[in-house]
Image (cartoon, rainbow, N blue to C red; front, side, top):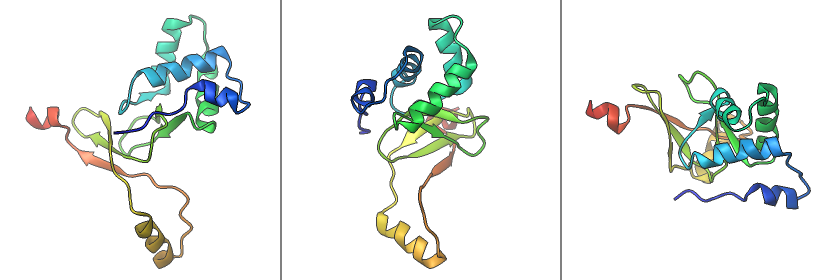
Length: 143
């Protein structure tokens, strides 16, 4: 099971004050739950519903700040229209359905020894990893 991350209060306790609009954006992404992903446009629409007058640039700045604090993760998947955001969780992979386009979290890690071997064999300095699987989700496969 994916672990929970510290609430925004933990970031504040580390000396990072979160303005009310940034807290709102964090809450919107956190409320969608584990394994769900929202684009910046979807987050903006939800934020506008809760705080009329909030600007898209405010939402974008909030997403960048929250990502920088490690509270949110930005997800790019092949075939996706835009970056999506999710609450930061332990390492995992993503699955993108070619039928409906839904993105799901998949519990998956690459062993550290495999990453080290790849780096040595190819002369690389690997700093991050992103794994995305593609195919059809259970609902699309059944239809």
